[in-house]
Length: 46
Image 1 (tube, one colour):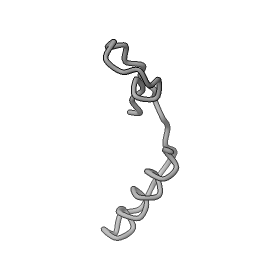
Image 2 (image 1 turned 60 degrees about the horizontal axis):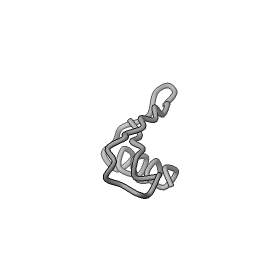
Image 3 (image 1 turned 120 degrees about the vertical axis):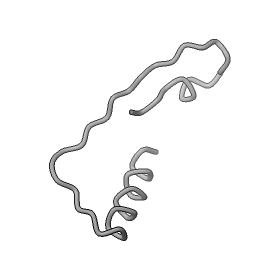
Image 4 (image 1 turned 180 degrees about the vertical axis):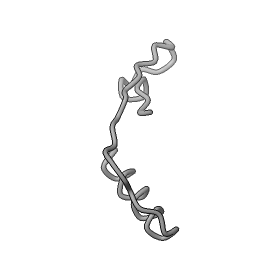
């Protein structure tokens, strides 16, 4: 679902008059806290 977040970011930047220069990247972090039973809850996109 990160593509939906990117669209919101791009919309915000456009409204504020910013433009994107260069590439973007995702860094996935796996968090093992033992609290969540759903695997997707254990990932953070930085």
